[in-house]
Image 1 (cartoon, rainbow, N blue to C red):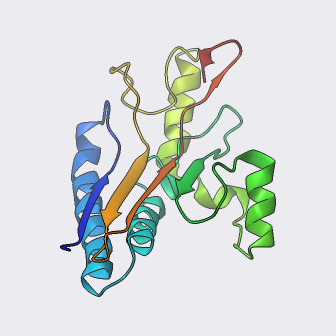
Image 2: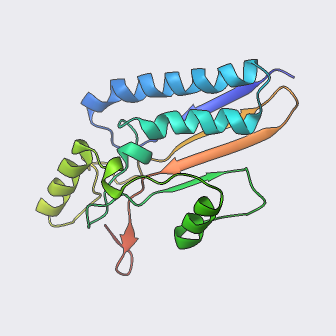
Length: 173
């Protein structure tokens, strides 16, 4: 079977000056994942590596580039087909990660200057839209992901988002 990987770096209203970094990041992400597949790696390993690369770059709304919540903190979600659990979130996900020996990072480690500016602009607008800079498009932005098929026919998918929050009876924050 010929291995295949597809990645995406989010969608929506992306300011022009951020597009080149996103395109370069998506290309590098797919190269990393495909290299794993070409070396007989698993689909799970390929999607994990591809998404991790995008999480580590500030061009994407995931991991290091995550949008900040109103408290100026990163509040993100990620998923991968890697355990028997259907979905882990919040405190349970943190506990599971600790039990698995997955290292944590300090709260400010994932905050970028861009995210801080976006939050300041959001608050200056009175909280009327998303916290991302470039708020003209009402569609969602962010959320990176990958799906891969390895040479043994195994399929895996992974996704990660630095999100935007919905609270207060559906008001976007």
